[in-house]
Amino acid sequence: MAVVDAATAGYTAILVPLASAPLAAVAGYLLGRRAAWAIALASAAAALLSSYVLYTSGVEEPLYVEGPRIPLVPGMGIRFSLYIDGLSAFFSMIVGLVGFLVVVYSYSYMEGDPGYTRYYSLLALFIGAMEGLVLAGGLAQLYIFWEIVGLCSFALIAHHYYSPRASAAGVKALLTTRIGDTALLVGIVYAYLAAGSLEYPVLAEAGLSAMWLPLTLAFIGAVAKSAQLPFHVWLPDAMEGPTPVSALIHAATMVKAGVYLLLRMSTLALAGDVVALPSGFLQIVAIVGAATALYAALAAAAQYDAKRLLAYSTMSQLGFIYATIGLAWRAGSEGLAAALEHVASHAVFKALLFLAVGIVIHEFELLFGPEIARDMRYVAGAARGSRLLVAGLVAGAAALAGIPPFNGAWSKEAIIDVAINSDPLAALALLAASAATAFYSAKLVYYLVFAEPRHGGLKVEKPPMAMAAPVLVLAVLAIASPLLLKPPLQAVEPSAGAVAAGLAAASAGLLAAYLLYSGRLEVVVPKTVHRMVLEGFYVDRVYTRIVVPSILFVARMSARGLIGVVDALASTVASLSLQLGEVMRSIHLGKLSYYYAVYLAGLVILIIAALIGVGG
Image (cartoon, rainbow, N blue to C red; front, side):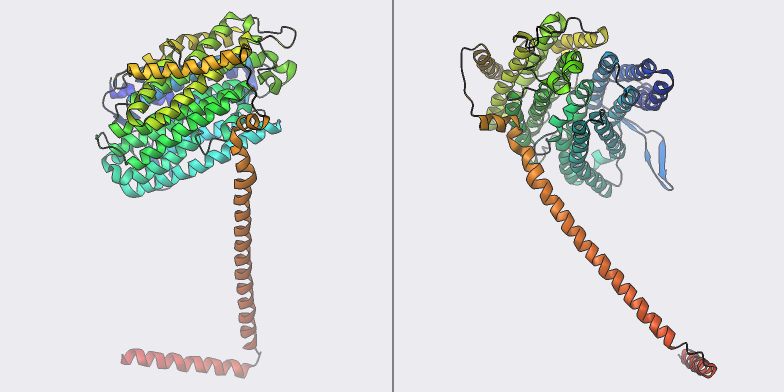
């Protein structure tokens, strides 16, 4: 593929959606909802086609496109460059595919929403920023797009800003991810001081010695962006945003920006060598991933809010990916394909589940309100009226649970294979998380499809075409998504032992769900235990009642101390000024003889000084 073609495709994927964002806002204001949607759809289609060109180009060696230099302030600027390799093209394709389907779906879902102009403008801006993040040729560009993605996330979560819950959720997401963003910024500054540049080719030449601290700090940024322990508390609350936003930002793309960042920084640190990263760092990555996978899977199993269940599920599945990255690097890059395969699988089946659940919510939200429309107990059996919706929910849940032949089975079993060969304890945690995943996947399907309707048999009869088409496409891709992996990102074939272990874990979770919801098994869970798991083991309470008040207390004390220092400094300056004024006033007596005496004394001193200078 020619460099010019790659550059054109890369810049198109980034610039067309970015330019379309203000156009969608103006068109929506002047021409109405359809015009804003059409512009957002055209920009998403351009991003999808461009990312497809990059993905199918068969890039084997990294291609660095040195773009124009953009001045920021006089004498300083950044270069708008591209870095195209298998990793960036892979993530670009995921962003383009899911972004396009979500824009199509939004046409019907956001119908009648008073903020449609703002919504479509932010959607186009997000797609362009996310493409820029994964195709950027340097860390300065990456950070700019990283912040734009965070801004879009905040604004879209709080889209219904008149709702206190949505507004608070947007602020919570922004403040929590700020921690990771700050760490990433510090790492970028250090990378510049160590290597003298932020462009990827220069950083790759600098090697691990220069990239070690930036990599560590970038991991903190990645953990916050991907809602991993302990910075995960923002994601369940982020479900207050519109459901298409949940599918695009908080299931398929934005939360995976952390995965991309970690992999990009890791490859730059290694610079293609087979030398493994420090084992301590890799162990921390694996522990955080495995712990989050198990923790979030258990929390998801207790949820009745369908979107919160899927939010905890997203955290858990990303935990699988992070654990694989930490475990795979120990033996080289061989096992990374398992993590990337699950990135593709998860993007498809989790977007599918969000959009399918969104059809149910859209049907009942005006009748019961958003909270009840998301409660599976109140909308029980609502999906059974639509074969397409039933097929989408079953396909997405089966892929999530790891049931063959759906995509999640192959990618999750490849991850388990990596864990079994690397760390038995991590493998045990991931297998337990797999069993819990199968349980809550069956729970979701049971309530929305098989449970007895609660409100007079109300159910979804025929979803709008704009909402049904993306669900159908994703249901088909739930089987084919591992085929997105192309050389050098070849799909992994798990061992027979890993397949058996994965199927055994999934079967255990499905059996438990069947026995529980068929009435063949009665399990009495103490209310305190159920409440604890339902609220994510009270981690959020620890933050709101201990961590945040402690930080505010320290901040207030520091502020008081700083105010005291400033007051003392101001008082000292004022006192010195008054004393100096008194001295100056004392020598202004208004007597001419006094002034002449001072003048003569000064003249004598000058003459003596001059004579001494000449003599020297």
